[in-house]
Amino acid sequence: MKAFGPSRGTRYFCIGVNYPERNEEYRDGSERPKYPSIFIRTHTSFVHHDEPIVRPRESEQLDYEGEIVVVMGKGGRRIPQADALSHILGYSCANEGSVRDWLRHSKFNVTQGKNFDRSGSLGPWLVPADQIGTQPLRVITRVNGEVRQDDTSDRMIFPIPYLISYLSTFCSLESGDVILTGTPSGAGARLNPPKYLRPGDVVEVEVPGVGLLRNSVVDEEQ
Image 1 (cartoon, rainbow, N blue to C red):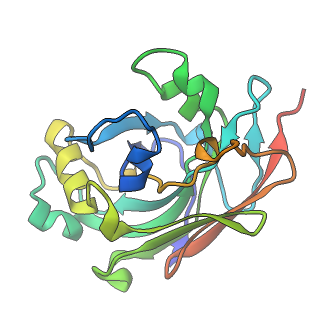
Image 2 (image 1 turned 135 degrees about the vertical axis):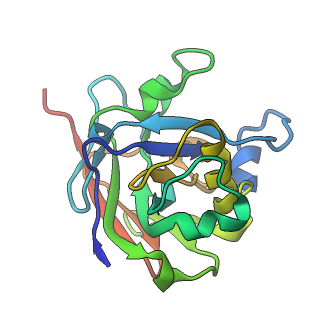
């Protein structure tokens, strides 16, 4: 186990809509996707454990997304699913924070709402894959102590070996690449009424056996 957090030069591949109920939350009548939704984040969009995440001046719709993180140890191109787990260095936690109204600024693009500076977090530990084994991982998100998300990796629409194989089909994965594997249902935007993050809130993302990532929320300084 070693400390883990955002790093300059690292590629962050993020997976959207990867749990069954998460797809159903959209209430658009669509079938489960045939392929993963993928976008990339920059290192400046994340903070470390115990550092505040920032609600930007431009929006009051900062939201949380607890996720299981995979860090690649061995790269490759067109990695077979059967070999994918052997390419993993270890696992960590993420709050893949989103600025919801900025996700809808254009028809096919979520990049803006996913890359506000210091809107998400990573860490606090990187736990080696051989300490985790192949059992399902659980991800739990709490806001001010209230459980908002709780699900397990064996329910992913696209399992981790598939994600590694799929990503490596169109680009060579490299040692150190980070994959954020998707968030379960229960994000603030999908509650009725929506519950977006406010200054003073505390968000915890826990993956038992991997770690607990904690961050408070602040407004961006004027």
